[in-house]
Image 1 (cartoon, rainbow, N blue to C red):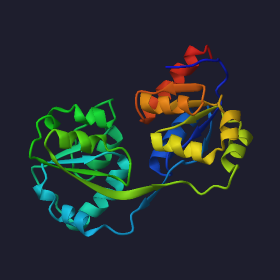
Image 2: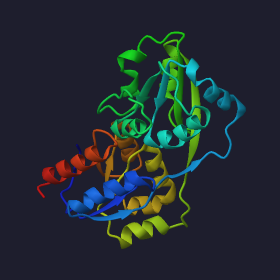
Image 3: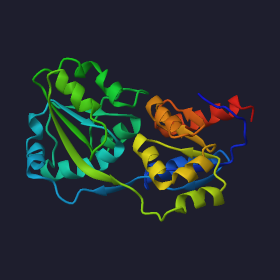
Length: 263
């Protein structure tokens, strides 16, 4: 954890995309006595059309040995597609979820998924025993459009036959120039909770360099060391690294930070 200056933390900005996950985190923070504001830094949209090659992946889902969902949003959008082709899911597949929230969503479809525990990253998934010896095995990665390709690259290096199924896109919120900075100032935000590297990148896009400099002492809680490095490189001075992007980890990081500053 990193906390360079003690200051009172009262007003929190939650930046998760709109939906159940954002609502649950906001409610938990309010229960702890914080004043909470929500401003998604990612807008999620279902892709309007699935290309022919990816429709074939869905048709031949039973030919894969491993199916990996890299977010709860991938479950939301991906399972809607899969159910169009497979009202009853094929058997003998190994299913994976990047974290507990993603696994919980898969349970609603009768799927028991393996997870990497608290290591909710591509690297955590890659450490799972069943993904070590995958030569000539077929792997389907259900994901959003774009994003990191660490998982695909490493599984391919291990000899797996990897396909990616993008099922939604992440878009920049529509905000006028200066709108986000004005809101942060008006709401007197003390801490922003960032749950992905792309969310941090969008924060930088929505703030001008001058606004970033002005707001650089706002606290950021981020989900990994990789995102923490991005935040430091962007000039933010108050950066705390949570264990992962889950609500529990974010709340724990906030509490430990306050305890560390003597609040």
